[in-house]
Length: 191
Image (cartoon, rainbow, N blue to C red):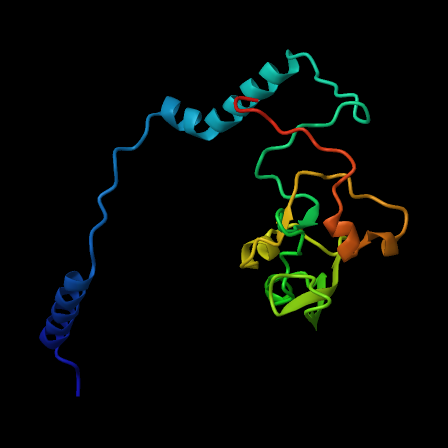
């Protein structure tokens, strides 16, 4: 039995009609001229070369680092600091360990203890008997600062945290409660 040529044409007509309903014709813009095509290809390179050449004509800025500190922005996240209440002198940290749970680097260690009437350390029922931050693991993300409901820990602007041994980079509660030795200057608006 030979196939009927008319039947085959009918099947192809049916399949092309079915496809035409599903296919969307994309209208393209006009083809760019040769000069526009060259500019599109090399425009970004030419702009970057212009920026590079403009920077080479500027005088270099040198900061004498140990004597002059580089100003940082006000939102810079540097050295951690634990706080006390100004009027009572009690620690703000109540040992809730929310900062430990929020820390992605797992560099904070808090061991809580109970406050007693004769030994009141914080305003809550508990206090942080041990509060340590391993600065060699800290990524300075600020999640500990955001997680603290009492604003007991904040991040200052000090960035000079280097030391000679790794064990010296574990900041204890006493180190975090103490004031930093030197202040880092802040940038003013427009700098």
